[in-house]
Amino acid sequence: MEQPTLATRVSSQKALESFSEALPQLVGGSADLTGSNGTRVAAHTAIAPGDYADNYIHYGIREHAMCAIMNGMALHGGLIPYGGTFLVFADYCHPAIRLSALMGKRVIYVMTHDSIGLGEDGPTHQPVEHLASLRAIPNLLVFRPADAMEAAEAWAVALNNQNRPSLLALSRQELPALRDTAEAENRTARGSYVLRETTDQRAATLITTGSEVSLEMKAADLLETRGISAAVVSMACFELFAEQPDDHRTVVLGSAPRVGVEAAISQSWEALLGDGVCFVGMKGFGASAPAGDLYRHFSITAEAVADAAAKAIDAAHA
Image (cartoon, rainbow, N blue to C red; front, side):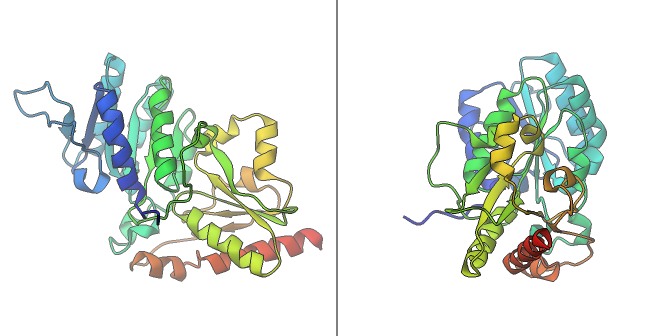
């Protein structure tokens, strides 16, 4: 049976349906973007003036206030707060997110429209630098899941981490399913894993996150037609991967030339890619168009990734 394609914001909402039934202490909300963020599910009833016994909050266009209130709920105890907005509006949330991390509190930030893949919303809404900024906050887990399976796994990790906040960066555009079945191990819990290994020695390792993982799979197919064996690595959470033992990191990263791919700026990638950083991503912003057109405009394509890998291999052998 053909696997459905789902935006990870939709996959997140489907996972949340199940978690909300099992965890009545979850209190959700959104800063005026409930429908876009997918943060409200069937188990939710909205809090209203004079009726505070329910479990969903319409915060209005008050991103910082929403995040500050969630910190207060986490400090009070007995509740697991989460709230949604667009990733570009993380700028308004930043001080409160930083406090969540500083205090070591389980607050979950659901941030959608995570890249230029948001399409015609315009360049002001393109969160080009935001992933790097958020990854720089100590004790914050930043997840960028690649498909429905990783979205569900990211939620599970976020809910189980009682002493640190988590942020889920989710796509607006639909993405293909990359893994067919659930496994006993939560692969996202280790931050990164090899999604596609080579049958012989690796010539290159393609490392990426979120919506660009499916693009990287196509790049690996292109390289195969050129006689180049490339592994594909999904780097769902940089912070968790950095905490893994050396043997796991070595297996995932390998020793072949590495190419990083993300529809964002390259900051935060240097430690993963090593010397001679090879990165396919954003160097600016300012265009507004359908998602596919934008990816082509900014040269974030399977062909560009394959060409970058070939050049990295040539440079390594020079």
